Length: 303
Image (tube, rainbow, N blue to C red; front, side, top):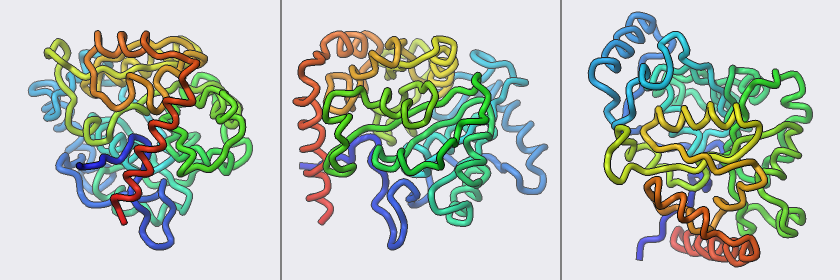
């Protein structure tokens, strides 16, 4: 039996490297030139080509969702599988991405060279633009710099992709006591978050985007506050080639936590809505144990 790495679990760390910093190998989807000489001209060519031909993974052309002048500046905190995949996809689509990890920009030179993303500090990523993605293990959230978002404008959208696995993250009393995971993250960061990209394998996020209207197109639930922030993330999801499903406020985000019916199944829009409705809050400890046991099996398979 092949045991898959759960979403939110990052690459095994190299020696001396924390797991949220790790990324390995080159991706089959090559990113644009970024800041290299001639990048401006190449970027223009990429955008023109995108308009004519569409994205190779099936993502919709930018003009379907955002005008060209609305290419976004996006910060990513965490350079593991999900963070690295989002950097690859978003730079390919023309966004300006700044990415950080806990070990500093020098450790991200290869990823920056590959994708055209800018390697920055955590503090710089938090102030990089209109969307910031926090994609690190739950145990690492309290270790982020204090007041990281204190001077970040309130209209900046903060996305939380995290998942709590006790076998990896330890015994976090609030979460074990029933606090909704992303509500806990929001309290740690001191600002609202949108829960997204937590229930999909990075390989699916990388490879399975499809044009809108494609039968069986994968859908992703998006929950969080305020509603206008949720709407922006729904647009970003659509642009990546997935159906965005409005899953309600942050208080409702427990429905997409590890082990729930919507978790890791690559469902289409009707399937996601059905799975969200089928989730039962009283079963959260059962769901968590199921996910944790899966992660234990993955760890065992790597020995």
